[in-house]
Amino acid sequence: MPNDIKEKFGLADISLSDIQLKKMEIMIDFLTDYNQKVNLTAITEREEIIEKHLLDSVLPLKLYSLKENAVCLDIGTGAGFPAVPMMIYRSDLKFTLLDARRKRTDYLNLLLPELCLRADEVIHGRAEELGRSSKYKGKFDMITARAVSDIGTLLKYAAPLVKAGGVFMAMRGAKEEINDDLKKTAGKLKLCFDKEIVYNLPDGDGRRLLLFVK
Image 1 (cartoon, one colour):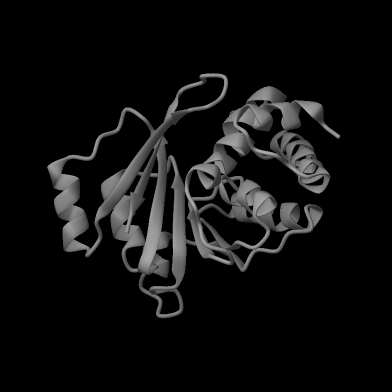
Image 2 (cartoon, helix red, strand yellow; image 1 turned 90 degrees about the horizontal axis):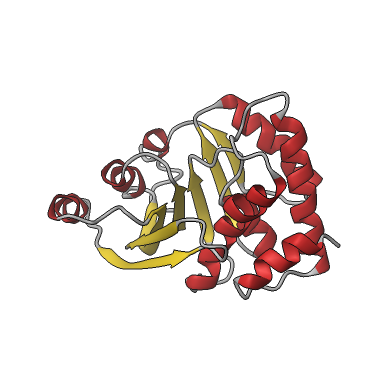
């Protein structure tokens, strides 16, 4: 089993099974190979992929208690972060993966079978379009967005999609602040900022901010 993945996750007090470790390894190899043909990420070194993509995606599930079998949406999922590592770590989660670029959704449709994972849907489209569809309105227990757009815009995207009592988890750089204008925007959308969690990755590679909006 890949010890560097196990050790890196261990620094964050996260234990992975042999099956989870194998899937993480498959994801690294698949991403590295595919990225040589189609540019999906600027992070290409193995150690950085483990920390800045895999661990950075999973760590929020260690910091926030999400109910079992939660129905989730990942806005702007890109190469599958944070959704796919979350699915590896929590196989009960039911994710819809959304991205506006076809090359990314094509990649995900090839990746998921390699990992023996199944998403509820992989959608080539935009969050504002989903929000106008009765199929998706109020559907999701959790919506994630990792370094996508600005907070104000993301609030507008998430508002029609999140369930009453659900949560929108924005994964940001820790320098961002919640000002009065954002609070007003949230209020108009019948949302409220629930809490913030600021943390560092184990090797101290930048601070992270999780914003939880209900």
